[in-house]
Length: 170
Ligand SMILES: CC(C)(COP(=O)(O)OP(=O)(O)OC[C@H]1O[C@@H](n2cnc3c(N)ncnc32)[C@H](O)[C@@H]1OP(=O)(O)O)[C@@H](O)C(=O)NCCC(=O)NCCS
Image (cartoon, rainbow, N blue to C red; front, side, top):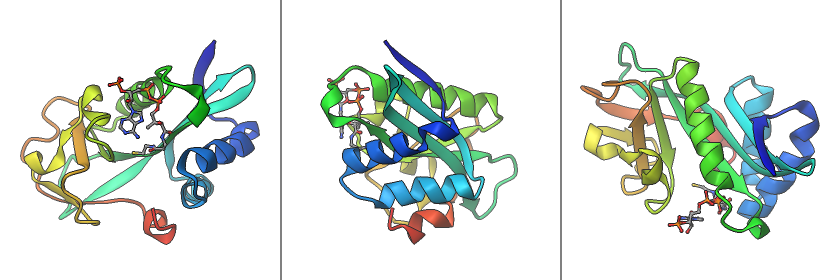
C-alpha cells in the first residue's frame, strides 16, 4: 500500500534520490533543498511504500505583479514519482492531497508550469485565459486553478515564483 503524508526529516535523502531519478537532473533536487531550508515550503508531501519514498510534491508561495489585494497563491513544483513505479496514480494523489492542504492553509489560487495532458484533470486551466502570465513568458504550459470560488476573477498580472527557482535554473 502507498501512503501519502507530510515529509519528515528522515525522508530528505529519499526525496533527493527520487527527484534526481524522475528528472535526471540535480536542479530540482537543489530547488527543493533551498526552498525547505529557507522555510518557503508551504506543503511538502511524500508517497511512501514499504518505508521507501516513491513520490514527492512541493508547493511554495507565488506573488503577483502588480500586487492584487486578496491574492494568495501557491506554485506546484516540483512533482516527482519513481519512474519504474508505473501508472499507479501516485502523482495524482500527491497533487490532489497537496492542493487540498494548500486550500485549508488559506491559499486561494494554485499555478503550475507543466503538461497540458496531465494538469487539467485536477481542475487547472490555461492561466492566460484568466489574464495571468509568468516571469518565464511561458503561455502554453502555464496553468491556474481556484482553490476558493472567484479567486481568479478580475486578476491580471505576472506570477512570480520564489527566487530559488531561477537560482537553480528551474
Ligand atoms: C509526471 C509524473 C509525476 C506522473 O506521475 P504518475 O504517478 O506516473 O502519474 P499518475 O499515475 O497520477 O497519472 C498517470 C497519467 O499521467 C500521464 N502522464 C505521466 N507522465 C506524464 C507526463 N510527463 N506528461 C503528461 N502526462 C503524463 C499518464 O499518461 C497517465 O495518463 P492517463 O491517465 O491519461 O493514462 C511522473 O511521471 C514523473 O515524475 N515524471 C518525471 C518528472 C516530471 O515530469 N514531473 C512533472 C513536472 S511538471
